[in-house]
Length: 309
Image (cartoon, rainbow, N blue to C red):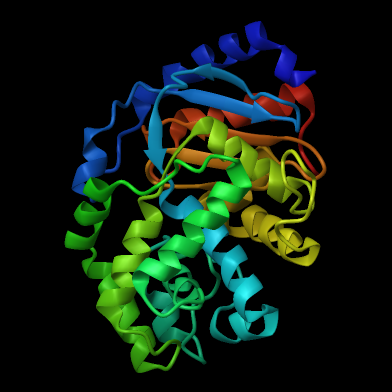
């Protein structure tokens, strides 16, 4: 039903677009400063042949922190649940996504969860492969399978910009290596991680990934399992508890949908046994989430009763 309400969806996106003036694009990664803050787009996938897509749907963007969900899925499939969570915790945090505080004060010194930068770096180190190219190739192939889009690659300009300014992530990585969280070469890991974050998608791609995670890890068309059921459940749980940075609790109350955001302005949402949603709006709030995207998801959840709670 929701995918057929194009007129309503167009109205809702224009109502949400008003909030873009209250946000600002990410500027700590130079390449992301180039985004148009007024852009807002939405795609919804229900398992049919096409997505409902409204707004600036021709725009593509980089996954940034949304990639943390996908690298976690691949690492869990590669290494198993016990091994991954021996290196990374399962607890939410009220601290910013790039904070080092809990990493220093917790014992043992492992990241609290896979959705903060320290945890994501540790997870990326567990993707199977002997070289950066092999590991990245496996992650891209996984995304190709999830979306049905073999053309997806990474934005070299954004990746280089992130790598050149990755001083805090570099610090997090060296701290974790010192404490035995991983043994990888730090520069190789950062090269892989920045390329992972710079993988470029559209809202339609994001909606299809969200749909697979929502529907027990099954392929959007063939319905064969791509992600094991127990792993898709883990992903949705982290999306609820940690997916919207340190605004996750408020988001769960206001919207109630498993979702993951990125500082490029993307949001991927997965409604269990239901829809996949992709949003792009690069104007961010003070927590690093798309300000208009958050308003749009809140409106969608309210109108169509999408909350899982």
